[in-house]
Length: 288
Ligand SMILES: Cc1ncc(COP(=O)(O)O)c(C=O)c1O
Image (cartoon, rainbow, N blue to C red; front, side, top):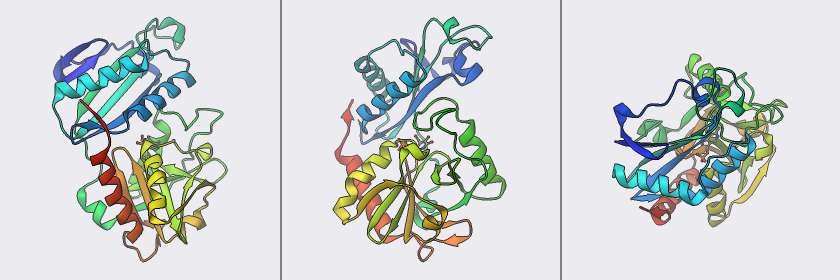
């Protein structure tokens, strides 16, 4: 494995950053999780757009153009030779002092790791996930906008810990007003009466790349798509439910807070969307 840090590639054991990096000291940075399928990088441009949008939000200049960043990702893929894998692209505020002042960090640091990743065991895709709505609310936009992908994931981690402590596989997070936002690190969808609904991003959901892909392919299944307000009763009474994310892909949800979704088995449209999404990942992508 060769890991990119600030212009050079290092073997895994030598890939190290400073303890004064503000990414480590303050979670001051942004990142992307990107997927390699069949020797191609899936929706790389969309990931880079979101990375630069998140960087702009925290007023962080990555110091390289989008084209150069694309080159870093593709070169990392070439050097690691994985035909299926996961890319973690990180831009931190860089090395500074112990104070939090970002002005003391003269240059952003860029890190690119290519590795394999499986977040859920295969059987979860076959039998579906069981979710618990947690008491930890999704960050409010006026504090830390959940529409951006910053290195500060404690909100999500607290949610995950809460679900885990109660023996649940995944957390469902509400926003401060009580509307459904998303899972700990995945977007949520429900299907009801030929409508495919997902929380609008301004209600606390990350504009997921997998979410966008699913919204694109849904009309092929006669599903009318809506990015909207979703309440817990909407979820409980849905015919089908699933999560989406780069690492998780599309994964069925069969139970939420003790309520069976539909007949408690992965839904038929969810299964067709999973197959269609896999086909999309075979067809699309930037070769390296
Ligand atoms: C908080 C959060 N929501 C949703 C997602 C899913 O987004 P994507 O499909 O772009 O991976 C992620 C993962 O990136 C995430 O961290």
